[in-house]
Image (tube, one colour):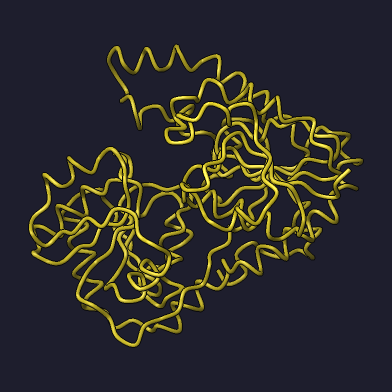
Length: 382
């Protein structure tokens, strides 16, 4: 039996959740990583150095390039992976991996209750036949999800915003463990452009940044792919450039030389502001959700109060007028450093089996993470 195993829903893209799963696997040398789907060309190359073990879904090749098509199959695929033979399992879950059966203790890092299950208005609206059909079709999966959330002995999450949602949906407590961010090098000089790094989906509200940059006649570089790209390009003026996917080296340079990065949607946490901060550049964000935890208004960036083009424009103007302290911004980002995340995670995995015995598999309430880590505040420099 392995001492530790790691698990993640699917390894088919290069997102924040995949970054967390990679950091988890790297924190425990030699630990196998269980997942339903793995597409090496679609995700981070470092996964090639890890013992990745997949479910029967791996044989359905089209799903590797469009994992959303197979969403109804994931509960069954997750069940097929268990029970995982390890004394401790650390799962990273955005869909159903928190329901993984284990032989030892199960610590689940639940990024958020699945958006596609619990926030269907993001995709299907709030009224009309589409919304009603989505609600009816997803009801069985909600029941499966609620049952799955009872399995882990301990829940972790990425922000106080997600903590509240987990409590509302599952009636369980989740300790906050800030996710890891790779620190990026600063640049000697700054360029003349704003930056968006995002999947191009409606709820990300990239359209606000595109419209604002077009109206202000300032440069905006948009990094990311998604179904909204064609619509956004139709909205954009000549100062807006769509880069699609970029390499890590290219992204490092963009972060380090942008005037500011813009995050206009509501995120559970959102690592983009911290990634820009790590390179010494400020972030502009909507003052809801995770941005209230990642952006210190006036110190590491600018918050705007309304999801409107005018509000984004005002924030962009303020960001260019303010004198920023690069080292203060970088210090703010350090609380999300990868070594600190891995240190806390290892301490938790080493200590939480005794909590498993104490709770008898019924889950934990407030306090165990702080106890294991000496009462540490998840955001020690707040």
